[in-house]
Length: 493
Image (cartoon, rainbow, N blue to C red; front, side, top):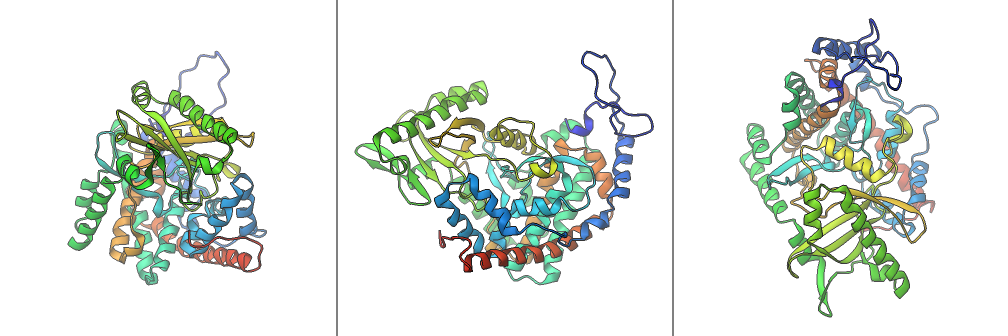
């Protein structure tokens, strides 16, 4: 049920505004807004934040130093991995953008707000969408990264997504006209799908999902046969990315036991992180405790499945761009025999970059925040998705969320995209984002705010150009910080 469908107490003459908190024990019959009232709420939001207002961007007076914002995040990260993070962000304005979610959240806080909230991704750039397996073994397309998820302004996700296509289009050398068409197509798809969701029944919205075969059918009129063949090959490759593939690629046999292969600093087995026997024992026990406690966050049937596997080995693994330096473990478990692996990833969940701007999470554990947001936004989620908090060897508490390392996961090859293929991909991302927002936000109000015309589409396309310019300036600031010696960097990993 979306938040727009929740019973609300309405103040007289003010559609959608709560009359006040209900006192404990007081009986009151809630009033549910009608679809007409929700539409009126969406249209009324245009007065405070006209759709055209989203097209303007310029840095606010006193805008924080972008490098200083990034450096502030270093305090909670593994020190020896921080230079690797900067090395990945330094590669191009596009890789910088991927790691700069905090910078954009800080900037969006100074832009107009529609007041129409939803559970948002918080880092909805184009590389955070992709394919993965459903529990029924169908290949799905959806958002696949929720480290920053939190309830917030729905348009923030759209702006981050739109700007990511502008930045990626520049990286690919597309013309300004082609880049504008890509961004506008993705936003138009978001707007169109949201209007479709507004007219749908609540259960139909909840059951909606994007299977890859259906996606190919929908995009068949705007892609070539060669493009579809390449996309199908990528999906076929994703089907091979599972625990068995990770087992063959990431492990080898040592003294008759299966062990994760060392590839520092990207993959470091626990015995290399804690060479002393006592330290290694403590670290091993920390990870075993994580697994034991995490199982309680799973459904009963999935606990039984997890219990059929035994923990064997673990390693620290570097992942992503923006996440580099946070604690991430890969955990090898074995089932019926030595050829029945399960690879889990335990990834640290820190405070969302959104929290200082939209309010703190209601969950005491950031791993739980990530899992709750993912389950709300994704059509289907990994059967092993759960969370836990552990006390590390540093004596500090660290929150984690856990999932399978690989389960038919795949992402788009941006470097191979033509303008037409990127346009099709933008549409797919826009559709997935609309479905995600419709599950948690007031889809009728959001659809009414967006409208039937292209005013919002054109505004986001204009914003994307201006913000891509800002992103290039921020990337240049990081380059200058590296050149001056202010920031240490490790390249090529």
